[in-house]
Length: 281
Image (cartoon, rainbow, N blue to C red; front, side, top):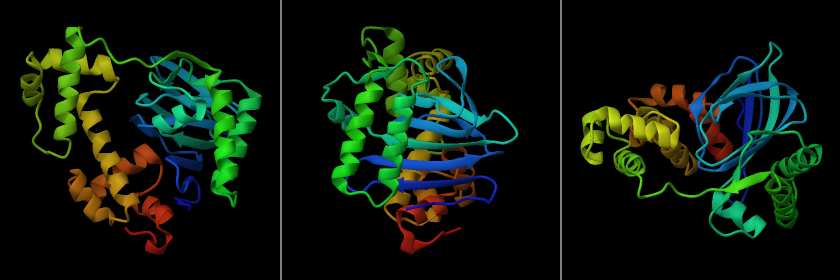
Protein backbone atom coordinates (compact mmCIF):
# COMPACT_ATOMS: atom_id res chain seq x y z
CA UNK A 1 0.00 0.00 0.00
CA UNK A 2 1.47 3.33 -1.02
CA UNK A 3 0.90 6.97 -0.17
CA UNK A 4 2.43 9.53 -2.51
CA UNK A 5 2.95 13.22 -1.81
CA UNK A 6 4.32 15.89 -4.16
CA UNK A 7 6.52 15.25 -7.20
CA UNK A 8 9.58 16.71 -5.52
CA UNK A 9 9.11 15.29 -2.04
CA UNK A 10 7.40 11.91 -1.95
CA UNK A 11 6.72 9.26 0.64
CA UNK A 12 5.08 5.85 0.44
CA UNK A 13 3.76 3.89 3.40
CA UNK A 14 2.93 0.21 3.79
CA UNK A 15 1.47 -1.74 6.68
CA UNK A 16 2.43 -5.41 6.78
CA UNK A 17 -0.61 -7.64 7.11
CA UNK A 18 -0.80 -9.63 10.32
CA UNK A 19 2.21 -8.10 12.10
CA UNK A 20 2.68 -4.77 13.95
CA UNK A 21 5.13 -3.39 11.39
CA UNK A 22 5.03 -0.39 9.05
CA UNK A 23 7.41 0.43 6.20
CA UNK A 24 8.14 3.73 4.52
CA UNK A 25 10.10 4.69 1.39
CA UNK A 26 10.63 8.41 0.91
CA UNK A 27 12.61 11.15 -0.81
CA UNK A 28 12.67 14.60 0.75
CA UNK A 29 14.34 17.77 -0.43
CA UNK A 30 12.44 20.56 1.29
CA UNK A 31 10.42 18.69 3.91
CA UNK A 32 11.49 19.25 7.52
CA UNK A 33 10.37 16.85 10.23
CA UNK A 34 9.10 18.51 13.38
CA UNK A 35 10.66 17.11 16.54
CA UNK A 36 8.68 13.98 17.42
CA UNK A 37 9.00 10.37 18.49
CA UNK A 38 7.41 7.04 17.58
CA UNK A 39 5.83 4.41 19.78
CA UNK A 40 7.79 1.85 17.76
CA UNK A 41 11.42 1.07 17.13
CA UNK A 42 12.38 2.75 13.85
CA UNK A 43 15.18 1.37 11.69
CA UNK A 44 16.16 3.04 8.44
CA UNK A 45 18.68 2.86 5.62
CA UNK A 46 19.75 5.98 3.74
CA UNK A 47 19.97 5.22 0.01
CA UNK A 48 21.01 8.56 -1.52
CA UNK A 49 21.96 11.96 -0.17
CA UNK A 50 22.16 12.61 3.53
CA UNK A 51 19.71 13.32 6.34
CA UNK A 52 20.68 15.51 9.28
CA UNK A 53 18.84 15.31 12.58
CA UNK A 54 19.15 15.93 16.29
CA UNK A 55 18.59 13.08 18.72
CA UNK A 56 19.77 12.32 22.26
CA UNK A 57 21.32 15.76 22.75
CA UNK A 58 23.49 15.48 19.64
CA UNK A 59 23.48 16.25 15.91
CA UNK A 60 23.86 13.34 13.52
CA UNK A 61 24.06 12.78 9.77
CA UNK A 62 23.09 9.57 7.99
CA UNK A 63 24.63 9.15 4.53
CA UNK A 64 24.31 6.45 1.87
CA UNK A 65 24.47 2.94 3.31
CA UNK A 66 24.19 4.08 6.92
CA UNK A 67 21.59 2.69 9.32
CA UNK A 68 19.40 4.80 11.59
CA UNK A 69 18.18 3.24 14.85
CA UNK A 70 15.61 5.07 16.97
CA UNK A 71 14.31 3.67 20.24
CA UNK A 72 10.61 3.93 21.10
CA UNK A 73 9.73 7.45 22.32
CA UNK A 74 13.13 8.73 21.09
CA UNK A 75 12.58 12.44 20.19
CA UNK A 76 14.19 13.48 16.91
CA UNK A 77 13.72 15.77 13.92
CA UNK A 78 15.14 15.59 10.41
CA UNK A 79 15.92 17.44 7.19
CA UNK A 80 18.09 17.16 4.11
CA UNK A 81 21.78 17.80 4.74
CA UNK A 82 22.29 19.08 1.17
CA UNK A 83 20.45 20.60 -1.77
CA UNK A 84 19.94 17.22 -3.47
CA UNK A 85 17.83 15.90 -0.61
CA UNK A 86 17.87 12.32 0.59
CA UNK A 87 16.13 9.01 -0.06
CA UNK A 88 15.66 6.40 2.62
CA UNK A 89 13.77 3.27 3.63
CA UNK A 90 12.36 2.96 7.13
CA UNK A 91 10.82 0.05 9.03
CA UNK A 92 8.82 0.68 12.21
CA UNK A 93 8.55 -2.36 14.51
CA UNK A 94 6.42 -2.23 17.65
CA UNK A 95 8.37 -3.01 20.86
CA UNK A 96 6.65 -6.22 21.99
CA UNK A 97 6.96 -7.74 18.52
CA UNK A 98 10.62 -6.73 18.25
CA UNK A 99 11.25 -8.41 21.60
CA UNK A 100 9.62 -11.60 20.31
CA UNK A 101 11.87 -11.54 17.23
CA UNK A 102 15.02 -11.60 19.37
CA UNK A 103 13.62 -13.88 22.08
CA UNK A 104 13.92 -11.24 24.78
CA UNK A 105 11.71 -10.38 27.70
CA UNK A 106 11.48 -7.01 29.41
CA UNK A 107 13.43 -4.80 29.68
CA UNK A 108 13.70 -4.03 25.96
CA UNK A 109 16.95 -3.37 24.06
CA UNK A 110 18.26 0.20 23.98
CA UNK A 111 20.26 1.51 21.04
CA UNK A 112 22.84 3.99 22.25
CA UNK A 113 23.76 5.50 18.87
CA UNK A 114 21.12 6.62 16.34
CA UNK A 115 23.45 6.16 13.33
CA UNK A 116 25.25 2.88 12.66
CA UNK A 117 27.83 2.05 10.00
CA UNK A 118 27.15 -1.62 9.31
CA UNK A 119 26.87 -2.69 5.68
CA UNK A 120 25.60 -6.18 6.54
CA UNK A 121 22.74 -4.80 8.63
CA UNK A 122 22.00 -2.18 5.97
CA UNK A 123 21.64 -4.87 3.28
CA UNK A 124 19.46 -6.95 5.59
CA UNK A 125 17.15 -4.01 6.28
CA UNK A 126 16.87 -3.23 2.59
CA UNK A 127 15.92 -6.85 1.82
CA UNK A 128 13.42 -6.72 4.68
CA UNK A 129 11.86 -3.53 3.32
CA UNK A 130 11.52 -5.05 -0.16
CA UNK A 131 9.90 -8.17 1.33
CA UNK A 132 7.44 -6.10 3.37
CA UNK A 133 6.43 -3.93 0.44
CA UNK A 134 6.51 -6.57 -2.30
CA UNK A 135 4.80 -9.87 -3.06
CA UNK A 136 6.77 -11.91 -0.51
CA UNK A 137 5.05 -14.64 1.49
CA UNK A 138 4.20 -14.20 5.17
CA UNK A 139 6.87 -16.77 6.03
CA UNK A 140 9.58 -14.91 4.11
CA UNK A 141 8.59 -11.62 5.71
CA UNK A 142 8.86 -13.08 9.19
CA UNK A 143 12.24 -14.63 8.40
CA UNK A 144 13.52 -11.30 7.08
CA UNK A 145 12.22 -9.56 10.20
CA UNK A 146 13.94 -12.05 12.49
CA UNK A 147 17.22 -11.88 10.56
CA UNK A 148 17.32 -8.08 10.65
CA UNK A 149 16.39 -8.00 14.33
CA UNK A 150 19.23 -10.36 15.22
CA UNK A 151 21.72 -8.17 13.37
CA UNK A 152 20.37 -4.96 14.85
CA UNK A 153 20.36 -6.14 18.45
CA UNK A 154 24.14 -6.60 18.28
CA UNK A 155 24.31 -2.81 18.41
CA UNK A 156 22.10 -2.53 21.50
CA UNK A 157 24.29 -1.40 24.37
CA UNK A 158 21.79 -1.56 27.22
CA UNK A 159 18.23 -2.35 28.22
CA UNK A 160 15.38 0.11 28.66
CA UNK A 161 14.39 0.40 32.30
CA UNK A 162 11.59 2.50 33.73
CA UNK A 163 12.51 5.61 35.74
CA UNK A 164 13.19 5.06 39.42
CA UNK A 165 9.76 5.56 41.02
CA UNK A 166 11.47 6.79 44.20
CA UNK A 167 12.75 9.90 42.42
CA UNK A 168 10.59 12.95 42.95
CA UNK A 169 11.15 14.25 39.40
CA UNK A 170 10.18 10.86 37.98
CA UNK A 171 6.94 10.89 39.97
CA UNK A 172 6.15 14.42 38.82
CA UNK A 173 6.82 13.55 35.18
CA UNK A 174 4.72 10.38 35.41
CA UNK A 175 1.75 12.28 36.88
CA UNK A 176 1.95 14.92 34.16
CA UNK A 177 2.18 12.23 31.49
CA UNK A 178 -0.83 10.39 32.89
CA UNK A 179 -2.93 13.56 32.78
CA UNK A 180 -1.91 14.33 29.21
CA UNK A 181 -2.80 10.79 28.13
CA UNK A 182 -6.17 11.11 29.82
CA UNK A 183 -6.95 14.51 28.30
CA UNK A 184 -4.82 14.78 25.16
CA UNK A 185 -7.84 15.81 23.06
CA UNK A 186 -8.90 18.56 25.48
CA UNK A 187 -8.44 22.08 24.15
CA UNK A 188 -8.49 23.62 27.62
CA UNK A 189 -5.64 21.68 29.26
CA UNK A 190 -3.42 24.24 31.06
CA UNK A 191 -0.08 24.35 32.83
CA UNK A 192 -2.09 24.88 36.01
CA UNK A 193 -3.79 21.53 35.40
CA UNK A 194 -0.41 19.85 35.00
CA UNK A 195 0.95 21.44 38.16
CA UNK A 196 -2.14 20.46 40.15
CA UNK A 197 -1.91 16.85 38.96
CA UNK A 198 1.80 16.69 39.84
CA UNK A 199 1.46 18.55 43.15
CA UNK A 200 4.18 21.09 42.38
CA UNK A 201 4.77 24.41 40.66
CA UNK A 202 4.20 24.91 36.95
CA UNK A 203 7.92 25.30 36.33
CA UNK A 204 8.79 22.15 38.28
CA UNK A 205 6.18 20.16 36.36
CA UNK A 206 7.47 21.45 33.02
CA UNK A 207 11.13 20.85 33.91
CA UNK A 208 10.56 17.31 35.20
CA UNK A 209 8.49 16.32 32.17
CA UNK A 210 10.94 17.80 29.66
CA UNK A 211 13.85 16.05 31.36
CA UNK A 212 12.08 12.68 31.49
CA UNK A 213 10.56 12.57 28.00
CA UNK A 214 12.60 14.98 25.88
CA UNK A 215 9.57 17.00 24.75
CA UNK A 216 7.62 19.91 26.15
CA UNK A 217 4.17 18.90 27.48
CA UNK A 218 2.42 20.73 24.62
CA UNK A 219 4.54 18.91 22.01
CA UNK A 220 3.82 15.61 23.70
CA UNK A 221 0.07 16.35 23.73
CA UNK A 222 0.14 17.25 20.04
CA UNK A 223 2.05 14.09 19.24
CA UNK A 224 -0.60 12.01 21.01
CA UNK A 225 -3.25 13.74 18.92
CA UNK A 226 -1.39 12.96 15.70
CA UNK A 227 -0.98 9.33 16.75
CA UNK A 228 -4.67 9.10 17.64
CA UNK A 229 -5.59 10.54 14.24
CA UNK A 230 -3.28 8.04 12.52
CA UNK A 231 -4.99 5.17 14.29
CA UNK A 232 -8.37 6.47 13.20
CA UNK A 233 -7.20 6.88 9.60
CA UNK A 234 -5.90 3.31 9.69
CA UNK A 235 -9.47 2.24 10.49
CA UNK A 236 -10.67 4.12 7.38
CA UNK A 237 -12.10 7.12 9.27
CA UNK A 238 -12.26 10.26 7.05
CA UNK A 239 -9.60 12.89 7.86
CA UNK A 240 -12.19 15.48 8.90
CA UNK A 241 -13.66 13.10 11.47
CA UNK A 242 -10.23 11.97 12.65
CA UNK A 243 -9.23 15.61 13.17
CA UNK A 244 -12.25 16.34 15.34
CA UNK A 245 -11.99 13.17 17.42
CA UNK A 246 -8.24 13.60 17.99
CA UNK A 247 -8.66 17.15 19.28
CA UNK A 248 -7.48 19.26 16.32
CA UNK A 249 -9.18 22.55 15.55
CA UNK A 250 -10.05 21.40 12.03
CA UNK A 251 -8.83 19.19 9.19
CA UNK A 252 -6.31 21.78 8.00
CA UNK A 253 -4.77 21.85 11.47
CA UNK A 254 -4.41 18.05 11.44
CA UNK A 255 -2.99 18.07 7.91
CA UNK A 256 -0.31 20.61 8.82
CA UNK A 257 0.96 18.61 11.79
CA UNK A 258 0.47 15.17 10.24
CA UNK A 259 2.78 16.16 7.39
CA UNK A 260 5.37 17.48 9.82
CA UNK A 261 5.44 14.14 11.64
CA UNK A 262 4.92 11.63 8.82
CA UNK A 263 5.80 13.46 5.61
CA UNK A 264 2.41 12.83 3.93
CA UNK A 265 -1.11 14.16 4.25
CA UNK A 266 -3.75 12.32 6.34
CA UNK A 267 -5.65 11.56 3.13
CA UNK A 268 -2.58 10.00 1.51
CA UNK A 269 -1.93 7.89 4.59
CA UNK A 270 -5.55 6.73 4.68
CA UNK A 271 -5.38 5.95 0.96
CA UNK A 272 -2.31 3.79 1.54
CA UNK A 273 -4.06 1.79 4.23
CA UNK A 274 -7.38 1.64 2.34
CA UNK A 275 -6.80 2.03 -1.40
CA UNK A 276 -10.51 1.84 -2.14
CA UNK A 277 -11.01 5.04 -0.12
CA UNK A 278 -8.72 7.09 -2.33
CA UNK A 279 -7.19 10.34 -1.11
CA UNK A 280 -9.63 12.48 0.84
CA UNK A 281 -8.82 16.17 1.22
